[in-house]
Image (cartoon, rainbow, N blue to C red; front, side, top):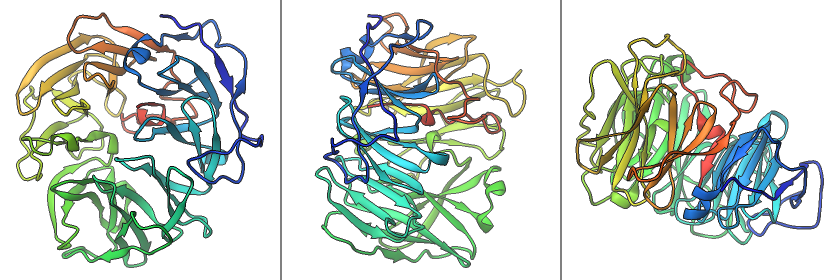
Length: 430
């Protein structure tokens, strides 16, 4: 249905007595009733309620939450980079001056609170509702906060790049000095403060930056290497490597741009032929010479998904059961260099281990950032300034869920970079 929604809003400046159960917070607040959504704003909650999926999105200058159980909508206020916990009960997001604060909010609009300031990065455990937060604040450092509010410090202030092991047992993170980056591994299962152990990396050149991005079941820690800590060089591609956390050895998988949303991992398919998907190609123009590699679970064999030479394959996403991939295939032959895609895209579905099945849709509207709903059948994707639900079985017509989204030139996201738009700063689904 086109929702007759209940809308709530919060001012991050207020302080109330409701305390979050997931984390200690210096100031907390709950959502309170606010104005209704403007008439020009469209929201259809049916695809979410049908699957129980929670949604977070930025529109009209504010971060909104849709509770998939009730269809209620909450206006959280200014925010970006929404991230749902494993259960979908909690949302972590950035807000505050220069988006340096991380807050937590219950999906049902209940408890909320400030977790940390001066945050470098934050990440949910893949197995439960524990949040890792890396802050430059000397009093915070790198902490893991569990579902009952216990916090354990496992790394120093300035630690960054926190990445969870596939089973939630350990975290990988980095620190930096004049010699380059240092990679650490910390146990997250033992209560109390502790330090990680440094992992010496054989063959690592001096002054090399390390950017962990995944920790898989069989291939180890996946990271980008940045020679001379150069961000500019990284925009021309960086070596994506697999690091053995026991032996400290590295091997190169591919040269890629350093966009985490262009890597997809699904541990549910660890026993199958493929579980890691990588968009390869080093040209800083986001859609020039880009191919998708569908790798085996050890990241040894990485065949290229077959397409014509004038097509780019990006934005891979696994279904929750690991049986299907959906990807964006774009015709780049008439595209303006270094600009976002404006036309000639299609969503394409593939089965695990199989070749291309065929397009879900093909039209003249730019389509990006597909996200699976929990039913393993429906996909949400950004299409123009809308968030649209597609049925991979082809039975239900496309449904506009949100319109308009805050676009790529919004303050929340910033302009697209060499054609790449990071939609994870605007949209998340549980």
